[in-house]
Image (cartoon, rainbow over all chains, first blue to last red):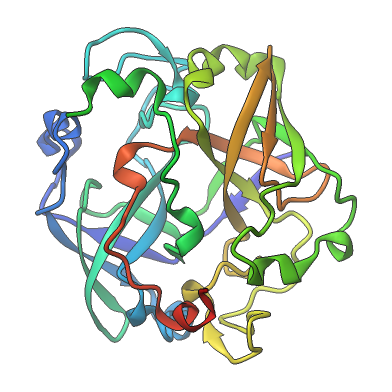
Length: 150
Length: 150
């Protein structure tokens, strides 16, 4: 059975095309922290943004709408070694769903100005959720990623 | 434009029906920590689980497949006050997508035994992603939720 979803908005990003997203930023702790963009929520969903302003961070669930292949084995840029796709955040996955935490700078009506954008211009947004205290996991191990932490 | 996704697996949970999920657990810091279940990944996607074992926490993106209404205003159980749905984790949202962080206890082939389950039996899983160091946001404010933190 398939499940079908309609975008609630779009990402506006300084990156126009996939090739412009600097993959090497994934290797640095500061990553995409300085990249600013805007989440445009369509008018019919704007009422759902009430009280979102109080949260510093938001989860954005979006579609990797330009991801071409669906792979089960991925080769992250860190060292190019093969890894199961569910142990990576690669865009080429069975369901091309992306998950990014953005920092909310300000809201102007149905426009959320945010930082830490790693999506491209026009990315369809499926959902936005607040980052809550339960999402802070301080006792985590990070598998193959650990040797790349500084 | 609609986007369509096929489940990669199913949640096995002690909760058979929505009514059995104790909503009041959302009010407690320990929440659903002790609730165990299993994520069954369908055989055709099992290769994507390689190396997932090294991660303590996993994001599960799933479908609230029994959520009936789509609401823009939600009334969280904390105090029953109205809030924009995107400032809550309510299941009744424009796209019924759920996001839960589970603790991985062990993997047996394509079965992941996990803790911190708040989904019901048979919940369709769309994606699994590792919880990485960038997902720890220690400087966050939590809007309306803050007054319920202990």
